[in-house]
Image 1 (cartoon, rainbow, N blue to C red):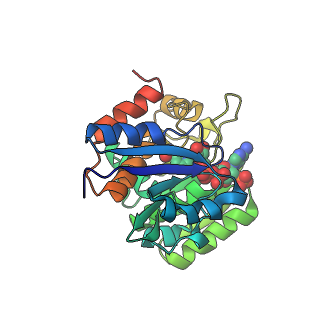
Image 2 (image 1 turned 90 degrees about the vertical axis):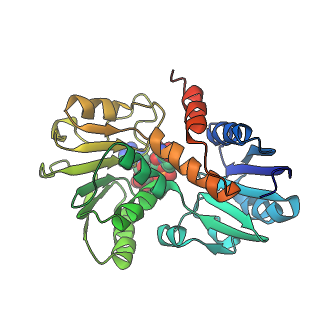
Length: 282
Ligand code: NAP
């Protein structure tokens, strides 16, 4: 890749001001002396199509996609990676040979954070709380990684049934089941319990699962990354479980996007330092 060509990357979302992606990607560009810039673009639902169509004439080289556009952007792209097709959502758009290609790095980023925490997925039961976009991405990656069983627990009956049906069509094995959100009495067999709801972002949110029902042999992951150690993770740690904070997924999904955008190996330590500084973690 020509190191001298200035390129613009960015993130499309609404709201987008809270996104840490500009900080992470700009730190990575600087550390590799790439003349690239990463900009937040606040794009309303109504203007998404116009914004995507403008990427090519403006020469925007790639974008990340966040709430509320991860699914609605798909019709405006030329094609999707296999992962994004299965998930039905996109968080990274690469412009390559004037084609817009949608990828999803959320699930692979989550798996990488589990690997760093030494969690062996083979033969494990997974309880996944939530049935939104992030839950979908995580579920597809987990099923690709040979877990033994997936239990979907979510508030909206319609969404959890739809997620179950979509996953069963893609993965006839293993067993996939769905339960209402107040199901808190799973057997204490080795389990990975994942919070993929937005509960935990606000200080007065209830815990997404009863802390008394968290078994010490379980591992508990939270996709919420602000605060870094959520009340749910604090409760799980107290119960003796191994915990996996969402900041690891955030870092690794960004690293994968960076590699798709630039074809350079992501400077992971630089990106991690920028992320932790932005989150005020010494
Ligand atoms: P989303 O599509 O809006 O889904 C949110 C999910 O949370 C839905 O299943 C929703 O249920 C559920 N929920 C919200 N409030 C609830 C409540 N009071 N009780 C029960 N369920 C509730 O959002 P998303 O994109 O999947 O994101 C989910 C979380 O993951 C967010 O906190 C986001 O910041 C985080 N995330 C983290 C990363 C990372 O890199 N660490 C990446 C992506 C997302 P209903 O459908 O019933 O409303």
